[in-house]
Length: 495
Image 1 (tube, rainbow, N blue to C red):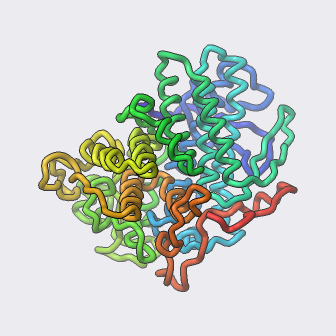
Image 2 (cartoon, rainbow, N blue to C red):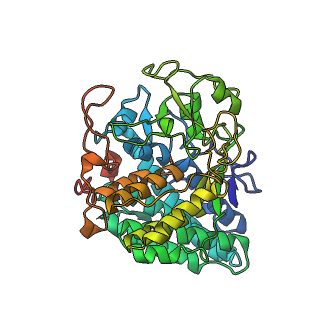
Image 3 (cartoon, helix red, strand yellow):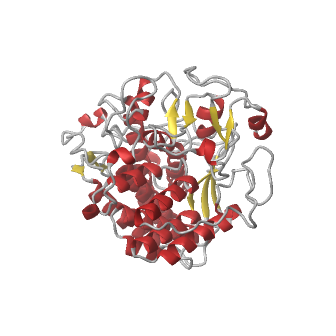
């Protein structure tokens, strides 16, 4: 397992004096480097500054996934906003920005879109800054370079999976001049990500732990992007058991000293988000599924307190869900719960999808059942539940021998696809996979999708806070990008 942990004795490495949508400093975070300092442009040029930039990129990645992007009230990362537009999270807050995303009706002025886009662009750019510094001042740290290419690719992939066509990809030259990028389609950005992951793999050292980690992460994410592009044959080929171990996971760690796990903070503690249950009205049903992959408790109940004695919130922040109806997730039951953001679990799921789309239903089912039979290996690290030994407060252990009960093969292709995406939804819950999967489901077959009707996939009909759900299937290019003279906003409404 590879883990990234923030430490309390050093400020974040920042680049001062560069102004654009995706650049800026956050001096209120602290990271694992030995020299306590901020890195100014004039101070670049040492092993220490190269390491500071590398750690800064990982810090940005931590912020945009399960962390908090600076101070403020709308600074959660993509794991929340992606899941809200999908069917993983429901807004139980009074902020209209969250409600707009949850109801699929995002306005151009929604400030949360700026924060999400900026967070991803900052993560990408921080990695870009680190690569030449590591190469010049720490030339033996080959796998550190590979790691930064992976971070760059992850940010590119996540932009394409979550935003509409039209996000500009800008750069800054060595003189700190902004090189404004043209709006790009998601296919163009996916292809950028593929090149980044190939570069990550090419920059790894044999027999070095970090090199192995980078190779495994790059293989998983390359397979993920290939599925996004509809190349399911090649996707399955790059994530084989030989290429990615079952028990691999890349984990972000959180702590009360530095930064709480924000999935816990905004659901279990603050009540501003709540796990969705049959949203709109066809979405996921973690509350009634009795599935240990997404365990749920009722806020303030004795069950919740078994895992977190401080879980006292019984009502949603907006008071629309009162005592007995406010749902709390238990995948990450405490403020310092680790979040696995890349796992061998996904490699096996990609193999399953590749097999299904090539007509190999035997391998498809075997891959899904292999995951279920080995639940302790493939679940989120911080998930306290077991599928073999009853844990008080967790879903009931199945009566069958083994872990999760084995699945049987549905008789139709459509039902097999439904099963695949439901399994993906539970294994990868709230890790910014679900929205991309839903977009793939409604995308035309000619573009690598499944051509499902939108109203059979996305929440629709009456929205519980009033009015109707909108038609958004993506986050929008934010108004702050108007600083770019090439800005065009979303190019189209395609998934």
